[in-house]
Length: 293
Image (tube, rainbow, N blue to C red; front, side, top):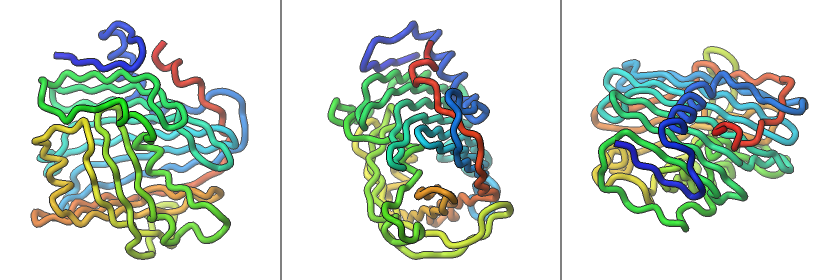
C-alpha cells in the first residue's frame, strides 16, 4: 500500500517513487553541478556498535562552497541493531550559503527495510516546506497528525547536524550546544534539544585528531511518529544521549563525530573512523526541483 502527502502538485506515484528512491540511494556519489568555486569537503565514515559488537556502518559527505552546499549521508544497520532499525537508507540536502550560514532548499530521502520502502522529496524556502511528497509501502498505522504549522520554521536532518558557531572564537566551545534543532524529515517533526556536557579529545583512524564538543541530547517528538514506535520509545525513555561534534577546518561549522546512547542492553555507539577535510573545486547545486523531473 502506498500513501502520499503533497503540499503542491504530485507526479504519478510509480514514476515519482522510482525517481526519488534512485536519487536518494545515489546521493553519496553525486557531485555538485554548476558554477565552480573553491570549497571545503568533509568525508566521514562511521562504525556503529552495540555492546562493542559491530552493528552497522555509515558515511557522511559534505561540500561547502562560497554560495552553495550539499550534504549526503548513507547507512546500513545489521546484527543486534535490527531490533530498532534495519535495512539501509540515504539522504541528500542541497542549499545556499549566505554569510557562512547554511540554508537548505531541497531534501530527499530513500530507505529500504525488508519489504518496506520509503521515499521523501521536500522543497524548503526560508525554513518553510513549500512542496512535499512522502511515499511508503508500509501498512497504514496510527501516527500523530502533522499540521501545516509543523512544516514551518524547520530544518532537515542533515543540515541540522552541521552546527554553525558564530563569531571568531573557538569552535569547540559550550556555545555550540546551546540550541534546539527543529527537525522535519518529510514525515516526522521533532526537536533535538542540545545542552553542553564537556570538551573532549578524539583521534579518528584517519583524518581528524583534536578537541571535540560533547552535547547532551533530549529528543522531543512532536508529530508524524507512530504512537507505538519502538524507536521513539527507546530514544525518549530517559536515555543518556550524547552527540559529539568536531570542527570542519576552514569553516565555522561543526559536524557529527560520534553518538552514544546508554542502555541496559548495551550502549549504542557511533564513532567516526575517518573524518577527513580537504579543499576542493566545489560547484553550485542544480535546482532542487530538477531531481524530480
